[in-house]
Length: 229
Image (cartoon, rainbow, N blue to C red; front, side, top):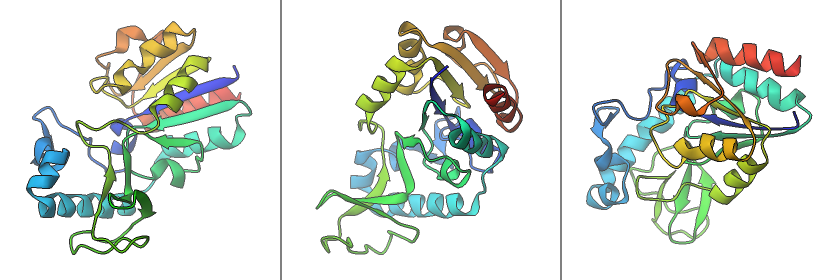
């Protein structure tokens, strides 16, 4: 095995106290997703959206990596082959857990995007008071988050990695949100063995060769131990 692609979702960070993206009632942190996770919602009420992501930013900084994040950090350090951790999560717990080969397909809570000059900056404070962009001085910064209706980041890079993977592992994902829900099919069609680690079976469980159920903080360290032998 020389090439591993891992997809992580909200389930891996839930044990660090970060709530999953969207509950069955369609709410994210008690807000309809249309209000806080769409370009239309931002245009309609930018103050609400900036305040919402200020809170997410604070929550991410207060959270700590759990054993699942730390195990993937160990895998990143010790696995000699190619590895790509694609995460749907906007937190930085993978990085703080020691992983470097991480791709945030839905953006990052601790990053802001200036729509005037198309630059991105690490950001830990508030956007509610309209701070100017450090690069161009315009008041045009928004959360660097991929909202519904927008294209996830670096998709060509992700599909290239999936097409070359020997092993595809999905951790803590619902299998309900595309395009990530289609990664297992793409990997499988290109010859990868597909493993799911999840609290419960996902909508796409039947596409995997193997599913292991339980807490990410228990399953992931055990699996990493197997890989590193």
